Length: 473
Image (tube, rainbow, N blue to C red; front, top):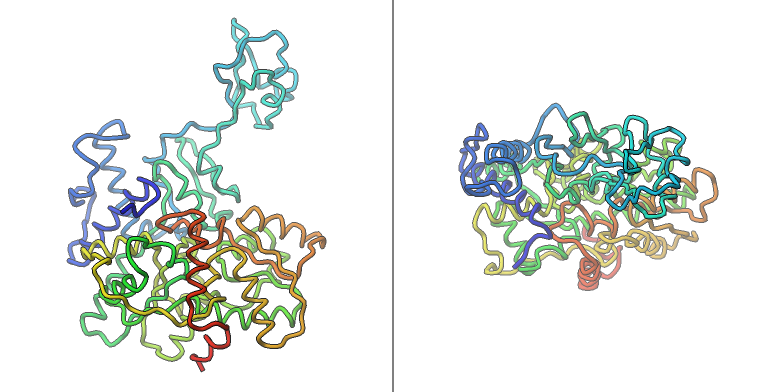
């Protein structure tokens, strides 16, 4: 059964799988030439000029799968030598130019960037063009087209530009690590660092008799992912990898919903703190609104804190759809609770590195969160949970929620708030379209994921937030 949306994801997975196999066996590759032959694309290159460049790119993929450049703290990184398949971008004159006499494009260009050859065909001088787009608007033949690279189009915070070598460059001061560029790059030239090797080391240490337990905290969006197996079989697979217990991050979401509803009623206005990319976006673009970010930790960090408070020696690994979580765990207030994070893509690689057939496993159990905690995975779920938290705690406060589906909607809501024209007292910010179910680290994406999460929520044994959190007392 198909496990991934794209062949790029599959290639990334194969690298992760082989790196994981080598890590389990204590024989990690030292150079690109030590890469197992199973992940070489073939005897002849399929996309590159030669097999040597293909191997060089593969070597860079292996390095990132093993942790990437330690001096670059951004988890989103560009493989420069792989980033050469896209046009530079910007406005270009296409073959549809008829060499007309009107020259409207020339007349409207205030920079003098347009000239004509002997056939009256227009040409754009890139050194003068400021990409205002006026020439494209007035061309009667629609002959001028704006070529935008997929990564640039995907990046809604404008953190990606092109450097002198025509490779993508990420401005870390703008990047919120949402991973949209990672999923959209057709060549896999932008990818996220993996911490699969230290995760394996943690698991091996537990299996090797070291005195600690390893807890897996799984995001509720897991319900929409491993479609070739039952969720209970995935739980069993995690335990076979060496995890002592599997706990729902949704239980942390229940805890957050309770606390955040009280905080909202106390302060009168809040922006959510669950999505690390959204929080990062506020910090970088709306510093005047930072004071309104909820003081609650994210569901991941909240349930991890509970575990560490009760069992300080334990190790906690978060598994979810989010590349931004890998940045969140670098924060001082979070890294003391979460030891590592990985995506669903990486979990699939871990399973297959041990040659697990999940569909043959017995079903384990995963039932320690409410319906409201589980629906945090999709846009609007957090707002519904906060409303329920207010109701269950008998808090007299009228919630006026603004649920933002994707970073562009987040930007609009924050702009309105900064100008005091937002008709809402709570902004639920989800950087990925659809919410966590649209995260870059998902195996698959699509509208069906929302239906699966809602179904998973309805299957919760604990029907209220209070019922779910009562087991923590």
